[in-house]
Image (cartoon, rainbow, N blue to C red):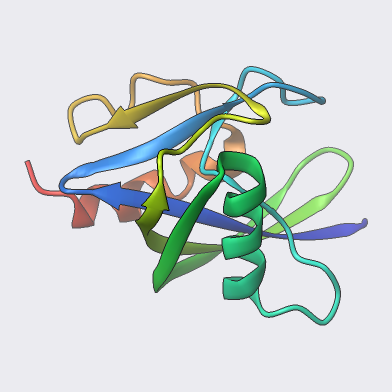
Length: 130
C-alpha cells in the first residue's frame, strides 16, 4: 500500500482551533486540519509553513510537535505529522477550502472530521481549556 506523508497545522488562538472543510477530491466536504504533502527531502515544519502560506495566505509559527497520526485509508496509508501553530501574519484567507471555523472544546465535535484527523481530537481536547 502506498504511503502518503503529510503535515497538519492545529492553528490555535486562545482556546480555539482552526478547522477547514475540504473543497475538492475524494474527501470533499470533510473537515480537517490544514496542511499538505511533504515533498521528498523537505523538513516537516518548513513544508507546513509553505502549505499554509499557499492554502490560506497566512504566515504561521510552527510551535510544537503534537503527534504523528498513522491511518489506513482504503487505497493508501496516511502518515500525518501534526503541530501546534500560531498566526504570525495574515487573515487565514481560504484559497482551496470550502469553509472554515474556529472551534472550542464545546464545538470541536460539531463538524464531520476526516477519519485520520478525528484521531487527533482527544489529544487536542487535553490541551484546550474549558
